[in-house]
Image (cartoon, rainbow, N blue to C red; front, side, top):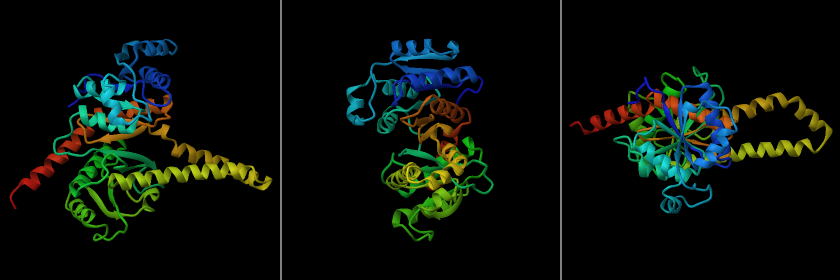
Length: 351
């Protein structure tokens, strides 16, 4: 368990993402001035020193972990990790696995992040498959002031067993209750219908496991249209289905942005209409802006790992660092481990 009397240490992949190393370093500088978080920037020492020298920061709260090279966004993750063991992500992940920090943030390749985590960071006992969670905006939910909900898995585990989906629910429950401060988050199982018998053997069995778990506030199956409507605080699904749902939502958002640009060029009336809607559109943009929530948690490991968006600027990465520190300080991984341990005890007990 994290020593609460010591500052939380967060590793930052300084070379990961489209805007590295400038934006991760600016993020670290800002966080060093406004919090007690100790940041470990992993990457090229010369590049980090050069960028740090150009921004105001608290030097005592930032250290450098040297690394050589980085893994590009378009490289094949497995081959890149094997060919570049001293790349910034690999060095940072080994340091996390060795307990030299409490959490890690990277805006680099998602595939490389998942593979490197699996290679060097211990999984929580009883958890065999990790889950990448997407944080997404929803319609206002009952008894919950947080406008963001959690969808997992969205790509780390393509196909799941019923037990994996239950463990994903434990992960989502722990994250939502600790990070979003929802005392008893509602859990939904993404399916093709609300009936308990829908979706094939895996989903039917997962539904029963979730229903039988008193720790979880399981509300049953939810459908695709329930995701943006905020039907549940946490929605669990297989990685294949979750990734398709996430990409569909991202594509729809891009479509509306493109339609707005097109409409603005068509006629004076449409221009006036869009101008009248401008304040509401700005509010929608703020609500859906990933920089507000920083990044997506990769859950199932003994220490928090946050994947920031590849295009993240300093603000988004700074928020990701704060979320990672909060997850470490508030014991998200410990909560998941407790749930997994109790489930293993219950299923191992003679009937």
